Image (cartoon, rainbow, N blue to C red; front, side, top):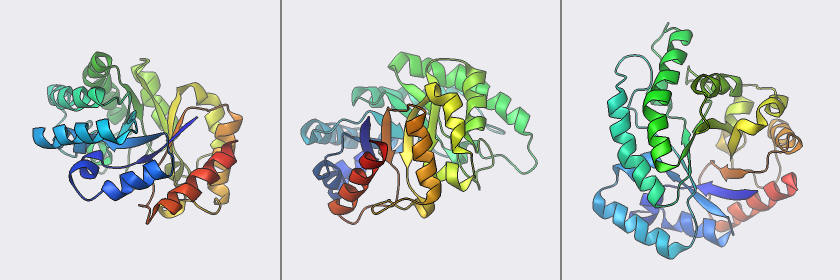
Length: 263
C-alpha cells in the first residue's frame, strides 16, 4: 500500500500552497495527488516552474483528481467529443510527463444533469464520451481513468454501483473505479459491496464526516468502509482528500492512524 495526500501542485510551486507540500513530505507520505484541471490551466511558465519544483522536491505524483472544469460537458447539452479530446491532449500530456498514471474522473459540474433529465440517457452519454473521447487519450498517455461516484447534490453517479455501470459499459482496462469514503458514508452505501468489485477499485480517497482529516479515531461509518476494503484485499493507493491540515502533526497523526487501521 502507498499513501498520499491531495494538493494543488501548481499552487505549491507558484503560489501559497508550498507549506502544505512541506507538511506532506515531512510526514513521510509516499506521494502527492495533483489537481489535473490546475495543471492543465497553468501557463507554460507556471508549468515549467511546477516541473522544476517536482524535480527538486523528491515526492512522486502518480495520481490526479479534478479532471475537468465545468466548461467541459460530459452529459446533457453541450457535449463535444473533440473538445474533450483537445482538453485531454494537453492535460494528459502534462500529467504523463510528471508521472501521473491514475486520473480520477469526478468533475461534478461537468456531469450534473438538468432537473428531470433521464438517468438512462445520461449513462448512455457518459459511456459514449468516455469510450470515444477519454479512452483514446488514456491509451495514448498510459493513464488509467477512475470513475468517481459523488454524493448529492451531484445528481448523477452517486454510488459505487452507479460507477460500475459506467466501468462495465465502457468495458476497457483503462477505465476503472475510485472509492471515496466520504461519498460512500454520506450516500449510505453498504461497505460490503466492495467485495464484489475489488478488482476494479484502483484508488481510495479518505476523509470522515464533513471532510474531516481523521487524526484520533474514525466514525463507525468510516471504520466500516476501511474494514471492508481491508477484508476484500484492497492494497493499492490511498490519498487523504480532506480539510487542509494546519500543520504537519495533523498529517502525521492521520497517516499513522490509517496505517494502523489497515495493518
